[in-house]
Image (cartoon, rainbow, N blue to C red; front, side, top):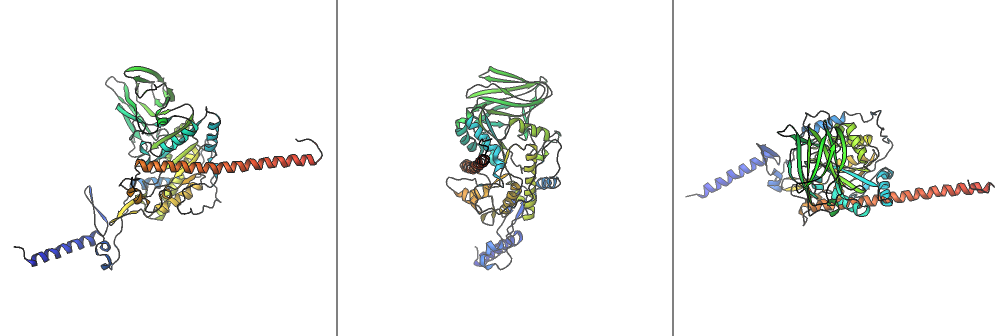
Length: 510
């Protein structure tokens, strides 16, 4: 029989164990093998009865790879000028003011830096034979064509164009408009994540990845995939009219398109690096087969139309945004030049947030990302640059989910770095609602973010995509107002000059 004294003793021992765990772990996380154990801090456990210092400290884990990338970037002399490239002039007298709370606009130091994009849109509007192309780099928030797809569809509705642009032949996540089925013989290689050090030339194309043809038993290299259009997403993205393939090989590569096992078209890519169009059927399903006598790299395939608006979604899972200076400069620049991008969007920062230790560390990370912006500008100065800052993210602190404390500092320092280089900055943290907004997005019904408190749901990504469209439209209106003022001033000067000449008695207007 259990006696009251035994039961009381059990409670005392239990209380001591609970209290001991709280004092020992103190709100921190302890790794036990592959598992992670966390426990209440004394202040959370005892509430107002706890008078000691609050030991609920959230530990910041080390990320050796990220530290190495920041260290490498710190060693880059941003003032070095490649004799074959145009040097980027960074103004040293630009005063960057603190952003207003919850600034959802695209912030710029000089709106004329967006002339390449807005002038290209005007050209397409006046001539349906022109092209506008946008390159959207980002981390896993973009996977499955998220965010980019809303931007693309909104502009294709207004300016024409079809297709969803470039994708890898072996994507980690397929675009929303097209399924990749029965894929065989393709080997994925990326410059981000776990890079294969056997490829030392660092030629990864402008997607930061390539697909290798695998060997066959017959001493050939071959790969094949079935493309099938999906019945969701946007119809314009599915109704592409051509495919461009970017291939490099030491032997010719044969590209064949089949419809229900019947050969539809063939294209031979010569030895070397080429981007050629191949005829594809206007059908819901077709096969692509590539064959070569030597191993070939396929840098990507673009499903698009000969004119109109196009946007390429390049999602780099786990990337911090600091791999661009590692890539082969000559090939990367040639790829950007060949596609003729008018706007390059860079959406990074989130993968570094969990590892930031203090504001100084956030500043180093921001400067490292800023130098990547400058690197792309030097390689390809013809495009406008838009940097999308990190979203709100949350972690568990005791019993509550709270925003990472250094996001606000990081995004302000990032903003300053981007603006002083002439790029535009869009504050996704503010667009979401600022501190604590990730928790609100997770709890929203329907949910706008998933319960990892990092990634958006499809509905949340759609909300961000349309907010980006609205911000670009607002900036375009501001740009047009500036252009109208400049045109009016030019006309005023011409009229004044003509009036002055007439007043001098010439009687003619020169």
